[in-house]
Length: 285
Image 1: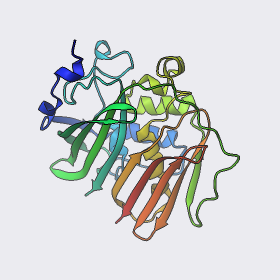
Image 2 (image 1 turned 180 degrees about the horizontal axis):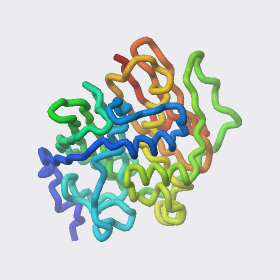
Image 3 (image 1 turned 135 degrees about the vertical axis):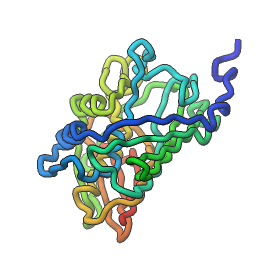
Image 4 (image 1 turned 180 degrees about the vertical axis):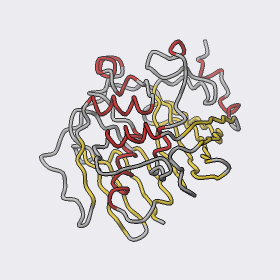
């Protein structure tokens, strides 16, 4: 019998569009500031929404009855129904044209631009590329190109072996150490209405998916990297790009680093074993 992956032509999803309207309300902004432990920043309706914080809006609204065993909504709809069990937000490229005002009516236009089936060391892979345009009224404010990868389950994953100490950061680097406890991961799931059980359900992630601990969300890592720029750079971010390279678990602290280099900031999230889990670059305006 052929598998679902063999009978579905995912290319039929190329060109599919989705339009979602929302309002950039102040409540999620204040809650994200609290989660970031930022009691100094005061944001009010009419202020510019910090870069990446549009992820607080346009949230999934699948009914509880349409969620899969892993907590994700069932495959299909706007994104293709890829049968491979594991899904990862692999990376994104963003351009920030104009600020999104807090309190504004906003609109997101999404489009599937590519679906590619490949094979790698872990088995079959499917890459889905989605482009989004975010509008405030009729003004284009943000362009985003996301890469999502689906893959086979693979075998159990070992916890990273912590180094006695991580290498000293470069001179002038911005550094923050993060202790990714379950409460932090749960609060970010709540902010983004993310039901994926790998981020908050320890028995599920260890016994069924074979990971050593809860997995820190890729968008949370990207938000923490951008938060370094928000707190330290004097100029706004015009472009941002990141790539996820390895998972971070809640079994040990990790650190985020930003190295300013003129018009750009080189950013990394480093695990306790020194491996780079996410690399990014912010271009300042």
